Length: 120
Image 1 (cartoon, rainbow, N blue to C red):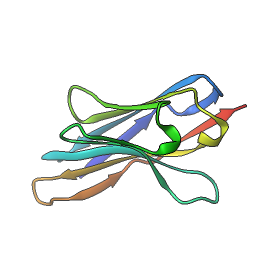
Image 2 (image 1 turned 90 degrees about the horizontal axis):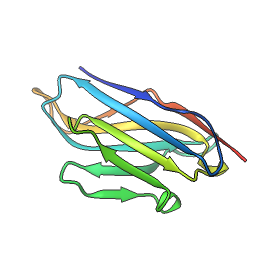
Image 3 (image 1 turned 120 degrees about the vertical axis):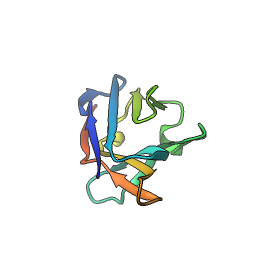
Image 4 (image 1 turned 135 degrees about the horizontal axis):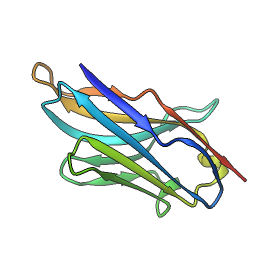
């Protein structure tokens, strides 16, 4: 079983900074990639940023130049540094980890979600 624990959400003023963290634990054999998605009310869940095991990084166009995704040294923690957030970044942010366990491969695991609210 795999657990993802997210932290760091909350209320931030536009132009400020906020950092989200997600720690993966449990029966993990290897991690293929880690990322952050978000879902605003009435909208579909969308990719914010993703980092593959080899280091390739992908960002949504709307956050390029403002958000930075990174991994911890343990390679089981992923961070999202949110600089200069805008009110339109308000959403529930979900951590996603694409991983392999001892018994299964290609599993998609999701965090519980953390609310980020950006005030104008």
